[in-house]
Structures are given as structure tokens and as C-alpha cells.
Length: 157
Image 1 (cartoon, one colour):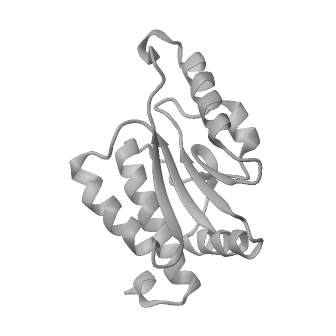
Image 2: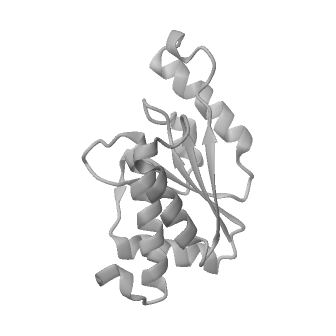
């Protein structure tokens, strides 16, 4: 299984880049992993929030493969424990999924078409975080899930 982290937006800011790279490298000891930063749609500032989300959804849906397992990060999603995320990761791998895509939407969230396509909708917290920090938290939590699956020390070190 390959894990993809997709995010609408620009390159990682320097204040989180090192952490993201560190956790991505750690995850690569368990799974192939890759970041895909999807550029914001053209003329985004001239679109309504609804139209912007629809345009972003069209781009994302064109990139997804039919058998991709998709976990969308959305504030309205279900909150997982680290153990639940590990269980979900293991379950997806056990089903021989080729690709697991974690998707961080744009500044205004994701269109309903993306929620409908998602296999899971996950909320990191009831708090709202900047997208850059969400990327870092996501990478760390997936790494933590990998260590939980292998019963390694990191989770409670």
C-alpha cells in the first residue's frame, strides 16, 4: 500500500517543513509515502467559496483513481484516537488497498462531492488549525499509527 498526503495549497512553510520531512521519512520505513500539493485553482480570489470548493473538487476527483481509499480531513468529521487511526490503517492495508489518500482540502473546506467520495471523514480536533500545521499533525499521527501497529516504543515514550 502507498500512502499519499494531498493538500490544496502552496509548498510547506519553512516553520513546518523540517517536521513534515522528518515524519514522512519515518513513515517511509513502513509504507511508501508521497506528498502531493495541489495548487490553488486559478482566479480563486474572484470565486465564491462555494464555486471555489466545487472547482477544487473537480481537480481532486480527476486525480483520484476508482479504487483509492480516501480519508478526508474535515472539521465536521469523526474524531479518531491514535489507536483508531492505527486500526484503520491496518484494516486498509489488510484489504490490499493499493493507495490510501489523506486529503486536506482548501481554506473553505471540501465540496460535498468529495465527502460523498470519501471512505472516511476525519476531524483532527474541534479546534481549527492552519493548513500548514494540519500537514505536520497528519504526518506525525500517521507515523504514530505505524508505531502502534508494530507495538513500538514511540507511542508512549
